[in-house]
Amino acid sequence: MQTIGTNDLISSDKVEGTTVYNLEGDKLGSVDELIIDKLSGHVRYAVLEFGGFLGMGTDRYPMPWSILKYDTVKEGYVVPLDKARIESAPRYPDSDTPAYTQEYGRKVNGYYGVDY
Amino acid sequence: MQTIGTNDLISSDKVEGTTVYNLEGDKLGSVDELIIDKLSGHVRYAVLEFGGFLGMGTDRYPMPWSILKYDTVKEGYVVPLDKARIESAPRYPDSDTPAYTQEYGRKVNGYYGVDY
Image (cartoon, rainbow over all chains, first blue to last red; front, top):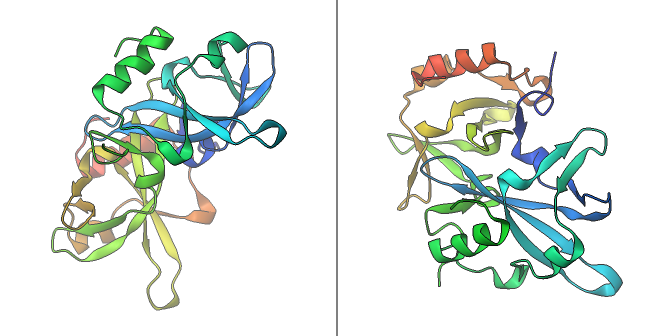
């Protein structure tokens, strides 16, 4: 018997809170929430929570779902981004979530080279 | 400014816990979790939590995402199902989650008349 998450399907509850790494294996943070297109039921973005070092608050980084790859050894997601790419990535503090308008979506997708 | 959830996009955090009604306006329960196709990023099922009346435990009812309609007046989802349809619907106790295999998926979709 399989449980949800071992097959091709996974529960949103399992995705949220899962650790996120970069290609070098450094732990960046975790998945905070998923942003879903209501009508099509497509997950558009995973919002990652990075930071919180040295007493600093964390920021939220929306990334197209398609760039997250699950690593079964690490038991976490890997994003193919180095430090410089992440440092200049679209982000916001949790207290100041932007409107996920088409314009914002295009900005996020454009940054990661993913078609909107 | 819009926040996530007022536009075409909604956060998984907002979906989970949202109240679910039937067409008569009776409160059935709430959304427990979403089941996502890892590769395509499609939300396949919303798992609804119904029951809990008279000290009974609740059951989980997986339903194709496409049958849930958001009602902006009720601020909840409406499913077009009467009591009889729900009473015989696929369900499981939270303690005994089935494998979401293709076979199980076909059973669930078949019950609701939604293509797998």
